[in-house]
Amino acid sequence: MQTKFIVVDTSVLPEIFSKVLEVKKLVADRTEKSFASACKRVGISRSAFYKYRDYVFAYDDKMTQRIINLSAVLRDEGGVLSNVLTKLYSLNANILTVNQSIPVDGVAVVSISLQFGDGAANPMEITNALRGVKGVVEVRLLSGE
Image (cartoon, rainbow, N blue to C red; front, side, top):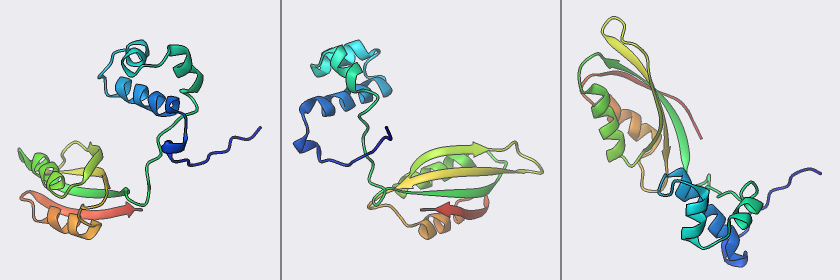
């Protein structure tokens, strides 16, 4: 049988599905140390959790959460990467990944994946803002959705 996915508003679903998602979140963010303690906290049985855990997933709306990938060349000076990350934070960008190469000839290449939703700057504003950070040699937008 082929798996089919549907999107359903949680208001019409049995409460157990929302509670399974809550248990998964509590364990993922380490608020709870085990599924057993998270189930107890949320008020569902472990058997109910295990029955549904592999079949219930949260849906992130791709229309409001865009992802872009940037490449930046940074001078090998203290605080430059930190200043770039601070600037991204100020632009309401959620940093997904940061990969930095070992500095060669006084510069290092950094790849950054960002997720941004409503209220965040657009990709061109982000790249232009990063170009203004002291120690940033070059910024290029590699891809975006």
